[in-house]
Structure formats: C-alpha cells, structure tokens
Image 1: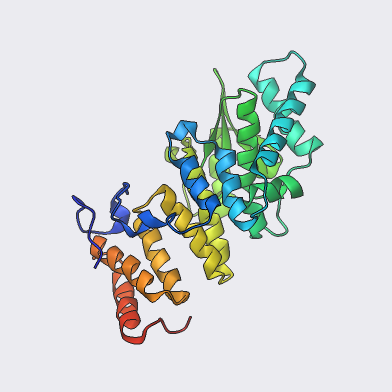
Image 2 (image 1 turned 90 degrees about the vertical axis):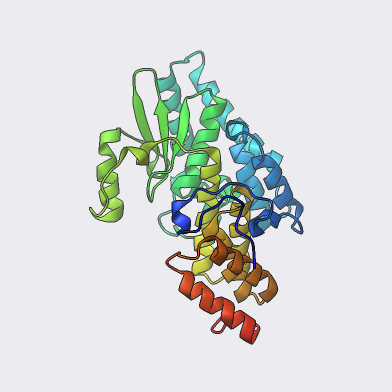
Length: 309
C-alpha cells in the first residue's frame, strides 16, 4: 500500500494542504509522457511570478495538437499588444490603456464568449481561442492578462466562483473586467449580482472570491475545466491527461490522485490504479468517499477490473 507522506496526519483530504512529495503517486506523471508534458512541467517549475502563463496554457494545448507552434501563438499575443500601442500613440494613462485593450480585443478583433457551445473543449485551448476568437471566461481572461501585461497594466486573474474575472489595480481605483461579456467593467460591490446570475441567489459574496489568483491556480482551473468536459464526455484518456497535468503542479493533491486511480481503472490499467487508490486511502482514510474507494479497490483486486466501465 502507498505510504502516507511523512508528517501528514490522517483525516479528510479537504482539510490539508498539498506539498510536493517525491514518493506520492502523482509525482511520476512526467516520467513516461510526451515532450509537451515535460515542457509543461518545466514551465511551472519556477517561482509563480516567473511562470509564463500563456506558454504554459499553450503547452497544455500542444498535447492535443502536437504540431502546434507555441512561439507562433505567443507572437499573436505580441501583435495584439502592438495593435493597442499603435492606437494609443503616446497615451500612457492606465485606464486609457485598459479601455483601448478592451476595444482592441473585443471590438476590433471580435473576441467573445462562446454561449452556443460553452462546454466545447476547444474553449479551453488557447490556440483555438485565438484562432476562433471565442472561448470561456478563463481563456478569454488569459488573453486579456497576457496582452495587458505586455502593455504594463496592473492586472491579475480572479478565480471568481463559476466565472473567471480580471482585476485592474489602479492607484486610486480597482475594477473588475469580465472578458466573457466583451470586457464589461464591474465594481467589486456588483459581484453579488454576478453570483446571483450564476447560482440563483444561493451563494453570498465573500472577500476571498475577489483575491488575485496565482498563475498556478489559473492553470489548475484551466485543466479542471478540461477534466470536467472530458469526464462528461466519458473520454477517459483525455480526462486522465488533464488530471495528470494538475498533478504536475500539485503532486500530492489527494482528490486528483483518487481521480487518476479511478480513471486508470476505467482504462483497464489495474496495477497503476491500485497504486493511486491505495495511496489515497492511506492518506485520507476518513474521507467521505473512502468506503466507495475501498469497494473499488477490492473489486479491482478480486476481478481484475471495475464493473460498469
């Protein structure tokens, strides 16, 4: 059975913070994987502020599109920033630059939210978003961030529940930008209205919802979106690829190790599945889903594979 990381108490996985551990089963996800995965691991293996968010997002896409030229799409972002500069002339006031950025992306280049096919996986691949000029809040937000950073704007991503936002931190003004709604500006006190539209009044706004996100957290959200899309489509191979890239960022994330084990079981990779699932049970024996996972482990040991897959 997989060993619990040294110094980790038993208990529900949700109560603990993951930390890298070379012995965790999630630590080997780049060992026998394609070069885009290895390059992704290299891209995120540095201080958060040094992570090239667009490059890492494009490396996620490169696993789906092996011929994708990362440099070509980075140049596309450079060109968008240059287009904004050309329109600004000598204007440098941050709010004016922000307004020009929004107009360039959403009016002149036609970037828009994909309402018609929100769960299309292409909405989560940055190359597709740039080519098709449509996406989900997160990927449109990554475009906004990357072009804005090239212009020196004080922008940060916000992992708002159900709807990624971009935050502008001016000297005297803080506003939110909704890239899915054509770059519409919001003040923080309007966040409850947005939550009500998403959750029907069931969720109350909290200050934590508006905190800046790390670049790693943005990438995890991107991969979690892909994981969800592919799980719903029962595309276990692609869902597994998303989980494994989350584990590149957080090697001991218990729920991802559990999900990796479940997906490996569905793919008939029983020995690997048992390694993951037994580690999860050893790490979080009191987790709410522990009885279900124990039953799956016994089923895998007894029958050589799960039923109903």
